[in-house]
Length: 566
Image (cartoon, rainbow, N blue to C red):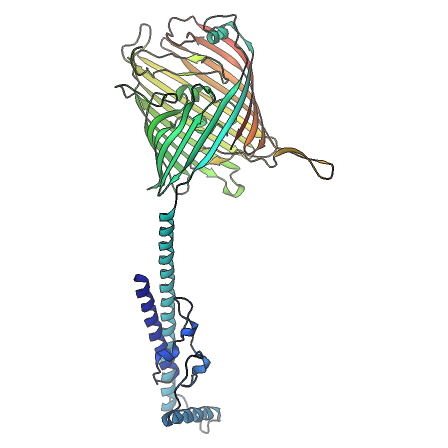
């Protein structure tokens, strides 16, 4: 209804303007506007108004009328008008006999006034045409908006299937007696055994639901007897201020290297501090994510349960054991002209958590006041481990992030501080504890690629080799090949989990890495890890950090990972 009214309005306006043109070009004789309106020139719902180059005759209007229209026979009065027009044209061609100044010639003054009036009418006509063009543009935009709304209403749910396969081999080449005690549970002569296993064997589905919902479900089958839930959430996108709200199992925003996908990390295993203070990363929670229009400043904040529910999908108990987490990050320098080969990332993360330090063995929930991690390899036990700290009441995390990428070179570092308050601590344990750790690494592409960066998430992205690795026979009898991308990397890790009577251990580890990217979706990672663990008084079972002897020692580990994702 609104569409037909608009068309009628445009039609009436055009006919009115046509009448003005008739008046202007006929010297004051008003012609019928319908004679200037040519439906034959109409295209769809739009109409075209064509003005003649000279004064039309009543019979033909300069040939503008279609063959569907014919003028009525000329009357005597019409003939007189035609004779007058011819006489006027002849007078114009004659040489004037007596020249007078324009100011003294009243007739010429009237003609000049007529000319000025004619120009005014043409200007008015042009302005009205311009107004019509504007109206047509607005109408087109309105129709486009209606079409977009109709398309959105017809939009259906989407689904995407993906997964990843990571196959590891770890060789424990050399370990001291103290390390053997930690790994074996007390035997100084039993060294860690080599292991080959699926590190990750994940399937996932994700997609969208109209109008602005999303979902993701990811399950890891690396241990077929006990599959683990990873990402499992639903959410709402396109909220005010470029925000997204997620509800379900998701990563807590602490530790840059944890927030990076395992598909894109430079090293096979995550740093000591990142894993110790955000073990397994994912927890059930409600979180908001957002960024500014330029994606140079971003944020996330949310509340999470501290228990890991990846194997049973639930937490039970009157103790909420909740934690509030937030992260701010930005990329004030990002070189768009080079495709992101240069950028600087900074990040600041914080958390306040309330564990149940008084949970007993018979309680349905566990005391989540503990920090632990493996030695940058898939050992059976966590070699750095505070155990569950009795009376743990509160703890906080403060994390600092930094990435500087200059072409093929990247330098990255993090440091996390974790104070803890203990209520009614066990004998020999202070009521205020302080743990901390961090890392720094440098990586370099020998083949000229760079580590891409996702500004909206503040994480690393997928490497795209300049050429993929392949070896094929060609039809001419020769062989074709590509070398993929090659990357060198070196990292130093430090973690201190020993303080105030809690002997979780102090680790100083070094990792040398060589990565071979076959394609954007497959690569091989080689890591050589060596270092020292000291001041560790924790038995392997982690039950009581005060009863175990102090364990310390050096070790050397080599690992290889083959990985592909789809």
